[in-house]
Length: 116
Image (cartoon, rainbow, N blue to C red; front, side, top):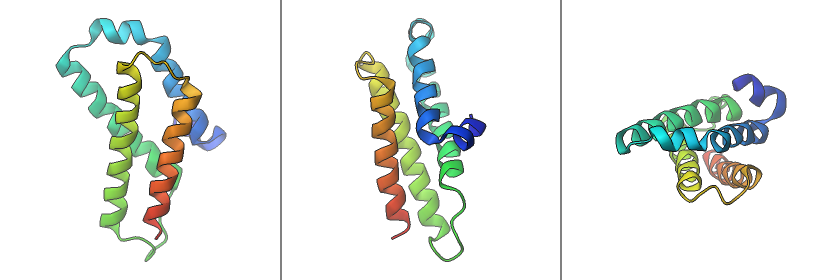
C-alpha cells in the first residue's frame, strides 16, 4: 500500500482501501463481533497512522515539535479510521471516492495546522 501512495498518491490509496472494504463487506459483517470490530478499527487506525506519516513525510527540524507532530498524526489516524467506521456502519451509501475526498480534505487541513 505504501508503494501505491508513492506511485498514485494518497487519494488513490484511500480509494483502494475503501473499495476493498466495500467489496468484502459481507465477509466483514459475517465475522464481526463487538471485540473483533474494535480490534479491526484499532488496526485500521494503526495503518492510517503509518500511511499518514508516509504521505506527509519528514518534518524539517525546527518546523514542528515532535510531540505536536505525533499528536497530530494520532489525531489524523483516529479521524480517518472513525470516518471509515462510520461509512461501514451506515451502509456505505457514499462512494469510496467521496469518502476519500473527505478523508484527504480533513487530513490536509489538520496537516496544515502542524506547520503553523
